[in-house]
Every structure is written in C-alpha cells, then in structure tokens.
Image (cartoon, rainbow, N blue to C red; front, side):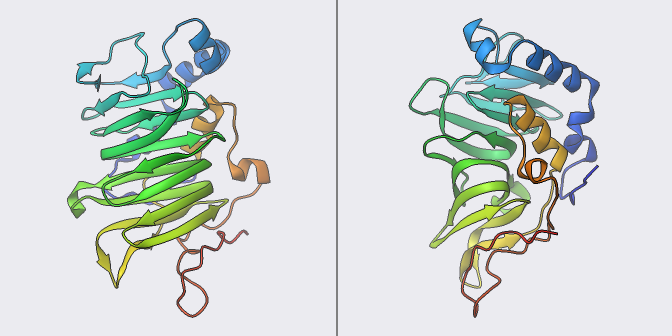
Length: 252
C-alpha cells in the first residue's frame, strides 16, 4: 500500500478500493464491457454508490446514470464512482460538483468542483478543464486529485498524479508534466506574491488512480514505466534563480 499523508481525511476514505463491494462492482463493470456496453445497452454508468448522492437535487437511485450537465452531491460517509466516456471519477463524501457537457453527450468539457474532493482519470481528448474557486487546470489526458479545504477558507489542492496539466491561479501559470505526483495549492490570497504554490502529495493513493484507470482500460504512468518517482512536492518553482520552472518530477 502506498499511503499518502492524510489531512482531514480518514484512512477508510482513501482505502475505498479495498472494499469487497467495490471490487465486486468493478469486476462486474469490466465483465459487462465497461462504458461502451453500458451506453449501448442503456445501462447505468455508475460503478458504485455508497451511501447517499443527489443528481440535480434528486436522490440518485439504483440503475440511474450520471450525465454531462449534471450537478452531483454526496452526503456524509458517502461516495460515488462513475464513468463518462473515456474518463472515470470518484467523488468523495461531502462533495458538490458539476460535469459540463463537451462536444458529445458523453464528453466532459469542464468539471467544476464547489466543495469536497474528487479523483479523476481522463483519457486523451480535446480541451477539458477542472475549475475550483482558486485554480484552473487544463487537462490533456492524465490522472489527478482535486480537493477544496473548507477549513482553510476554500484553499484548493490539486495533484497532477501523472500526465500534462496547464495550471493557473491568479496571475500564476505553469505547465505541469508529471510521471509521479506533482502537486499545487491554489491560494485564496497570494503567499509571497504567488497564488500557485508547491504542495506535497496528500489524501490520495497510487492504488486509487490505478483502479480508476483500469475502469477505462488505461494504466497510470508508473505502471507503464514499471517504476515510481519521488513524491516530495518538488518540481515547481525550484530552479533557475527563483524563476518558476515546471520541471518533471525526479525519477528514482
């Protein structure tokens, strides 16, 4: 188990992939042919729902699908795992987000996170974004973790677990290229003149990304490379006379 440091999250939240119910749901999802088959057979694209979730204000019921354009909310102790197109999402408890429609019904153009946290794996595709109150991330095909810290005035955390992401917060912009967890804070008010600051890997695990990638027939960068890097938060704002330099995460 590759455990990441926890801040305000419980171990059971980040170990959801060990639940027997999830493993059974994931196996059934794969056996039935995944999202393509679900679409073709008009089956639900929800892989697993634990507890209560609402879609557009109404309670999500068994067999219902999540569609682009929907607003999703999860209650305490609840979580929702679903697949849209070539992307998969795990919405943590006490979260609210909207998935906005792209150029097709099943394509997400924008994920707007209002509260809580979401882990997502995105296949290759046209312009897509994740937006929180304090940062914007342009997704090119990647696995990422996003969380809003209500107890820090809505400060946003974003980890580019692998892939390429165009990051911006306030006047700060950078392109993050990561094989293994490069993370950022989107500050509510600038710190030392910066709205985008470096962060460490918190509140999510490698295994979570691996399971979400598997749901959409993908593999993480470290699975492809056969080795993991160092998740120490280095890589952003660390080189060349104080200039911001989006270096890749150092590899072992």
